[in-house]
Length: 336
Image (tube, rainbow, N blue to C red; front, side):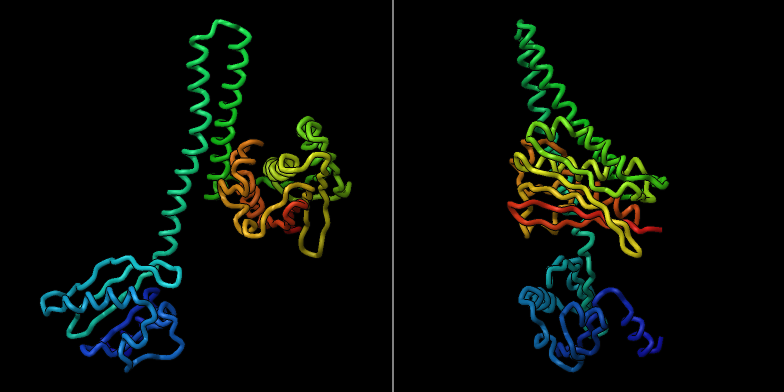
């Protein structure tokens, strides 16, 4: 094959490819290789160590070069290294007196593996507490003769079973939304009545903290959405606004439109969200205040479900917040 054609093909590779001569001078580096090593100019002809900016990569390559042998083509195989916050697999070959360095970006896979580990850890943690309580309740009931006490303990057990059931239902809903398996059946609905229904569901919870709920959705405001999914979205937002509010606080639900989008906002006078937590607030199991979150209940999946339902409608979920003053969640949905 023509050498120029081969080098042109290597330039389109999504791996970083660097070819050095025996004196470690750069003979070729493709565009992705330049990007990985943060090179703005073409380094061909320069000694490779002159252009390296990472000490660990330099150490690994130096070690590999000590193994150069005409009979040993593979010097380093699938060595995992970190460069500029990304993860790469490093392979180094000695081919026809040339040193070929290949860097393959595996960052998305590593992120996925970490997310999977975090997910298993979080689910285990969320189930561990109610299971421990149930175990304790059942052990106590076995030795309890007082019917009143038994009824009290069974109420505790039932509450924990509900907690586990809610977690499993939320996990199933989220899993279907993430893999786009959950069908979205859109129709035109009036959101004001949906919000009124949610307010009725949360009336007793709001009354306990003397929280006033205001439905300021325009009477004729309509959305082309899946009614069931949007009910879940709004209930999660409004329920959070009540749960994390202050005594004698308020919750306001409003609507507005622009040329291309319809918007719903849920605003509260609650504890607010720290600035550093805002980018993470829609992630699975993320909690700003873990101890407070467990006190008020919930699975830690509500806002993630909100985000995915909005995205399933080709929309977006956003948040603004002032710590100690309250939060405002904004749902943006295309008109068509």
